Image 1 (cartoon, rainbow, N blue to C red):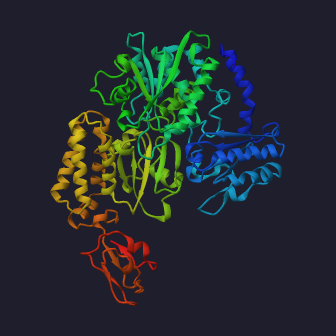
Image 2: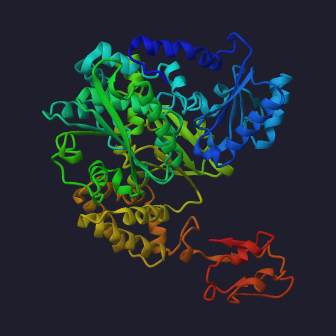
Image 3: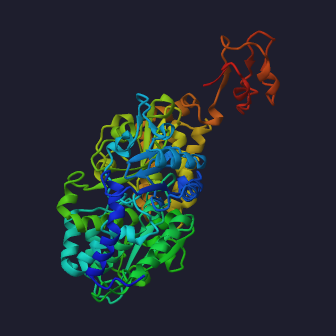
Length: 625
């Protein structure tokens, strides 16, 4: 690679690669060359998208189409429920559920004969209609992509494609036109708030670090995404790593830093590999390193690996981990902007926050402020999971309602079940009931109802979920992930979990419910860091919204959802029982008795609630109450 020494070199690289990108977005693009885009995110790779890529390339070669067809691995399209995904451009044809064996048909039928492959098109479950283009699929209609703009569009391992879609143009604009002060003011004006959970404005963070009179400063990207079910940051790094590198360089220029660190968990091998490629290519082009674009600005980025400790998502614990120390949070102040990495001024932001920065610089703060709500501008990426039809990665404008995300984007609840709650913000968030489905999503609204934005995990629960058990699940996680430094988190969360276990075992009392609330509020007020302070949120939110379920467990010794093993009651419906004796013969404790061809019964005193009878009965006669 030849070094990009100035703005003219950058423009030249863009112009050389722009035609291939125009081809992907314009059906009327000149020429007849096709680009076949194959999803290369972790989810699709686990479903053999690499085999699909290789089979497509082989079919292209076998049919002598190498001059007419290019097969490209791109990042995540977001629609995980329908993966692996293949898109044909400029035809604008979107294939879902593709298998390696479909590659030959795609080349022969679609590319050579010009026929769409109907079986691979998305089927709208509402009316059975086959949908050809991505934009017409309901999952995408209410989305607005900013952070995910290039995911599924460019080859993440080809810096030329990133440059062709205005990559590094924001860095060039900052270095050659705007300067430090104007760039900082633009980010402050945008109101971009941290997408990692806290929602603190990035402009203020950068300003605090810029004010410090110290020759050595650092920029840190927090890619330690530890929430169960969350994969927002991972997908951005897998699909568009250069956007984060560019943003870190811009942030470094603003505060006067010449080094950046990306702290990423080692469980993200694909994201790590693509970051390594992106950093190497950016260095080879001179877009990272010394004298960037001939402006005298120096900036380098290094990778640091985490071992999966959830507490290291907290910025001071993360900093200690990079330094080689135990990942424990510090008492603040001083804040990292004053004394951070190796006691030097440091700014820490997460992946999604950085991914917004280049777009804001290029389009302006006024553009960004028009998106979202009054106090929460822009969009938010959510990992939509759980009992939802359209599991996937979605990016929606702030201010959209939960109902729109769950039913319009998410396609509603699986198997026609009734919606019960949605957990936002991961273990630190709260459970939101159906009463708040029409609330507009932004930082302040979610906090007002006992939850939080968090990094963007959104797990949907249905009528079969026990909310007491859900609270217990998250407490098990946060108890295990506590660093143990402060007593409220180390001991308090353990006591909370013990009370929840007592309740789900059918041994809880009304006094336990009072203790649960009192202890949760105490931990929230006294824990040292964000992990401890927010750990009681699942307990407090379920107590508030689903108190009747707690009462059923305590007063009636019954789990309404039938989830809590020690509260399950297996019975036989006499009207459905055929008297075949199959359940009796498999019961390990001989708790089922009866006469052939007459209804059998279960002795509740003997029943160990193993569920063997339920899985054996072919007539649906075994019921769980």
